[in-house]
Length: 155
Image (cartoon, rainbow, N blue to C red; front, side, top):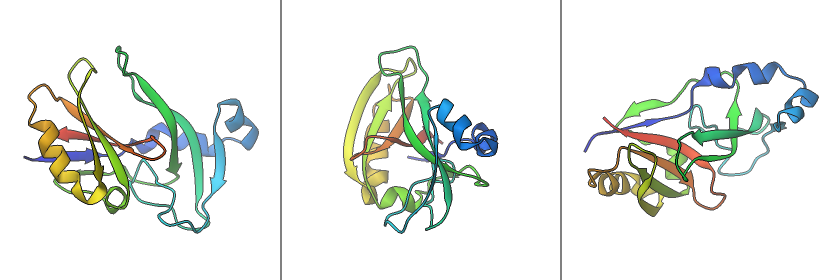
């Protein structure tokens, strides 16, 4: 089964990088600089990890803006100047390095399936969840912190 993984659109976050730290704080956001942790801080635009010294914004983002009990928002990292990841039948290394929760949703935003997987098993989980004809799209989350990672659509 063919699938497409997408990061978040860069233009959504670009204006935030021009704000002062006080203006970010008023929006519940924070400017941070990546340290040397491995794996690094995951940018949700490019689906790549930040390198030591990279500027990041930690923002609260509504990644599942649906009219259902599964409406969700959580903290995510984004990096300035990144291009949106958008690839068919390819999994970014960032996802492969982490334990993931894959969640399937129907057209009305109701959860119809889920899997807890090692990042190396992403394709297997995608295939299993999309085998359910009710599954319209998937969300991938980093399992330990629970934050949103990426969108998966049928291709």
